[in-house]
Amino acid sequence: MKTRTETALVVLTSVVVGLIAGVVICRQLHSDAKLPTELQPGELQVNVPVDRNRADHFWEKTDWMTWVVTAAAAASVVWFEVRRSRRSRQVEIIMDFDKQFNAPEMIQIRKKAAQSIRACREQKASPDDSRWTDVEDVIDFFQGMGTFVRDGHADVKVAYKFFGYWVIRYRVACKQRIDFQQRDAGLLVWADFEWLFKQFKKVDRKLNEGRHVAAGNESLDAFLEGESLEEERRKESNIPSKERT
Image (cartoon, rainbow, N blue to C red):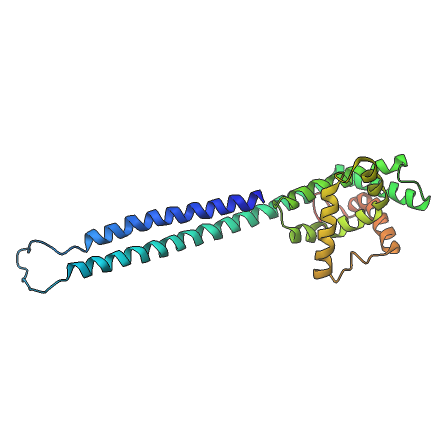
């Protein structure tokens, strides 16, 4: 909402600036269009009847037309520039999250989280098991991303294309822990992560035929194994941690 308000203010300002510019331009045109009062040497005087009231009326109409055109042009330029700049910034924010997610420290956190989830799932551990705390750094990461997207600082579809695979699977894998924490501490706990998950489900059904959402336990087990082995795989392939695969 804040971003939309700022955009509206920029557009409104551009309209006002355009109107002022239109007034200046039209007044200049009006002054330049006045009939000469004196003949220059060598000029031939031609007596042409001029209806000055009609001429003034014409320039008044032209003034308003120019104001509108100038204001519309200025507003359009600013509007497209704001949209382009905002879109660029949204992509930059998601790419920053991507770098963090693939940093060596985060790879270690993801590995530990995946191992703890697998152990809890295999042993059917209760949601208050201490091993679930290993997952919370990953959930907090997506909570921060959800806050940025929810507040309009990043686009949902762009975020989905980068993180839909992980957000949906981590949310499914950690559902019992998230539900437990929300029952214990309130629904505001990881609320933006929950919101992001719901938005990604909608986008997944629209863009990906719901494949991430429909992933079953077998796919989830393969996902957790992949997260556990991500560090080793990158070392074997000599892939820098900051790069996506």
